[in-house]
Image 1 (tube, rainbow, N blue to C red):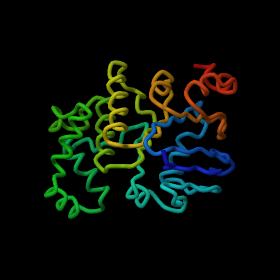
Image 2: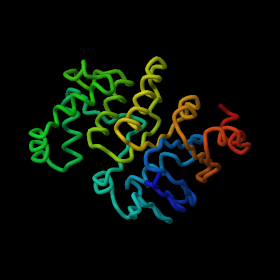
Image 3: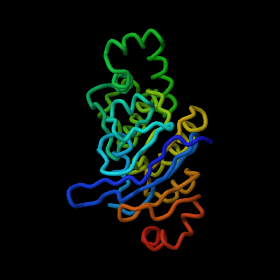
Length: 247
């Protein structure tokens, strides 16, 4: 597999606090990669650096071999690199279907572009993705009235609407009813296998990430502590001491 994302010695400071300290890791095209670590270890900050929300203070980030460290969120998203958030960002008074169409409009830059896309089947695609995440029966429901877990599924569908090459998911199972987690895991795997979306996942649920990811990087105190297969990371004494031992 070719290298899709390369994070090289990335440093990010907020005043005197070093949130990311010379972090390096890679994500191969076609894989599901995991990012774990204690609260405050810099995971969400590095997501912000990768997606252009946080200008970095050192290092470089490459996507498909091209440097993206000086780009902002819009150009990076249009290149095919997108993210979801710990807290969903849903337009609560719109229906699920309207949210999907807003997502498509945002990704392509204008309402006019959305109207042009309608002729090319944007509503058909929205219906397909709502069915894919199990929300098709709720397509006319107000998004704000969905359960928290359903809103996360809707956000996932909205991200898929723009056909990302790499999707960064920040704690996708956080706050979700345990009965829905297995269904979400299945849909993440299907998005990877059937839709060809490479995934980079921040996750605190170790059962989830160890069964989902092929490669895992563990952060602690803003630095890379360990990186490898799930078995290698789970059995690394440094990871056990800094993180997994407290689980």
